[in-house]
Length: 279
Image 1: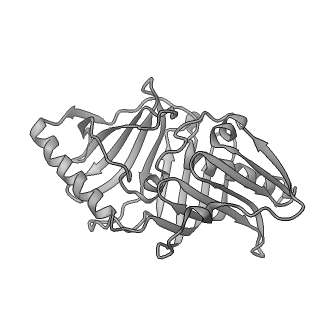
Image 2 (image 1 turned 90 degrees about the vertical axis):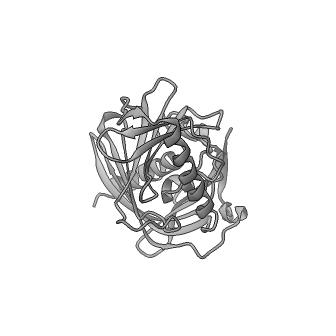
Image 3 (image 1 turned 60 degrees about the horizontal axis):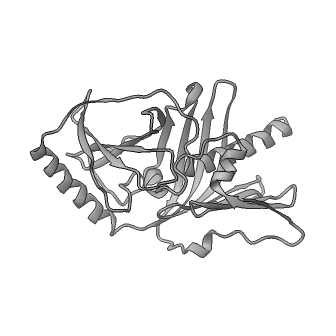
C-alpha cells in the first residue's frame, strides 16, 4: 500500500474519531422519523421507564477500554483503520494508533473541552480546545463537551433527563424522546433518543441544529431481545452526514473492569517534542 495514502488515512481517521467523539461534524438534511405525540398518561409511563433505566445505569461501570475499528465511507474515499480507545464518562477519551509492531504512531486525548495530541513521526505535541481543533479542520463545533460515553455505549445520558416531548416512531412500536441539550456552547440544539420501551433498549440518537437540520444520526446494531444496559454496544453507525458520508465503529475486546481517573487521560510528552498551542 502507498505509504502516503496510509499516512493520510491515519490522519483522517484520527480527526474523524475526534470529531465523532466531540463534534459529529457536517450538517445534513432534516429527518423526522416520528409521527404523533403521546398522550400525557402515556408520557408518565415513559418517564418511569427512563427513570428506571437511569437508575440501572448508575450501577454500571463508567469506564471502558477496547480495540476499535473505524470504517469511513465518503463520496471520494473509503478506508478502515484500527486503534485503541479508552473512555471515561461523561466525555473523556484517549485514542491511540499503533503500527504493526505495537509502537504508537499517533495519540489524541480529550476531556470534552480541551485536547492533546502526539504526532510521533514529527515529534510534535499539540494542545488546545476542541472547538479550535474542529474549526481548524473545517468542522463545525458540534456537541463539544457532550456525553460521548453514553453515545458510544448505547446508554442514556448520565445527567438528569428532562423529557420535552415523546413521539411515536412512524414505522414501529418504538418511541422518540426529545431531550434539551444543556451544553450552551453546542450547535446541537435538539437531541432525540430512539427508545424501545418494551425491551428498555436505546436504539439510537438523532441530533439536530437550531434550524432543524440533521447533524448526525447514531444507530446501534441489534442486540437481541434481552436487555442489559451495562453491556456496551459493540457496533454503531453514524449517518445523516453531508454528501452521503457514513461512519461505522466496531468495539472489540471490550473491558469495563478498569476504573479510570481523569488523570489517565493526559498524554506524557516525550523528551525532545515541540509543543504547539491552539487557543
